[in-house]
Image (tube, rainbow, N blue to C red; front, side, top):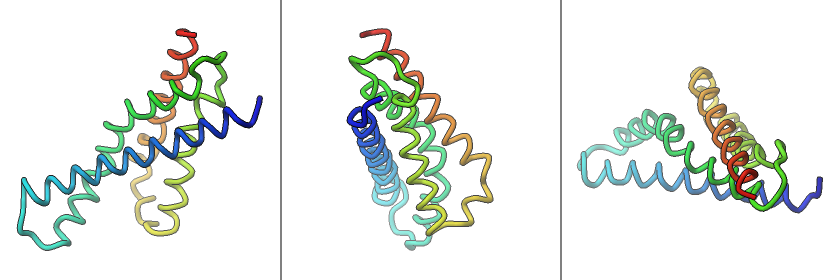
Length: 133
């Protein structure tokens, strides 16, 4: 397999990660300014910690399905190529959690659900793209 399509799929994983982060940030921002304004910053940090994992799963499904789709689009189906966007997210997530939020690993079932949902979504997106080609 060529390196260029894998690099493109990894870039799609980075873009999907950035989009997912932006959507969760916007969600918390709307909560802070519209739904529950006037609280201390600790309130919003706690809200973000509660909401981010579940929002990451819900929003991550379509985002990573599209990333998997665009990774495989106009190519013969290749499992590594379809899974690369989600694998990129998982690698980034692992590094950031290990560096800054080790206590998040205590919620390992939720982490596994998040990572598996992104892998499955990217896989399905890649499958759909290969059928369309």
